[in-house]
Length: 97
Image (cartoon, rainbow, N blue to C red; front, side):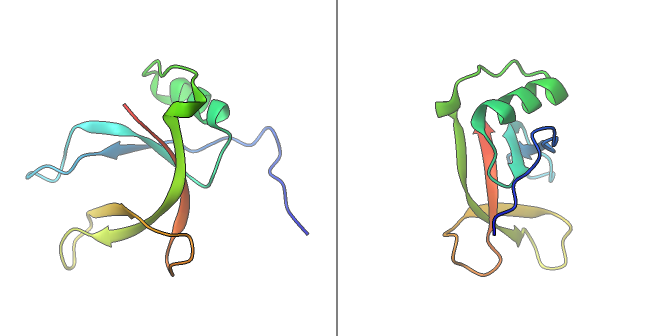
């Protein structure tokens, strides 16, 4: 059995930032947990953050990431791409700006 998301479900968009020495960095793009329709993802990004991303599906990527702490006992995390079959991997949809 396969569960389908309702068409009215919203996509929670999060900022993707480059890491700087002061633990904050420039905006690098946007991402959402899960694999989403590319056009719906771009529309959600534009609605929430208004970066005026073009409606071009080939600029949206889907993959799998893992989360790693930047330092031991740190609240700051980075993401690394990985294969879907690795323990701890999660699906993402993202766009780089």
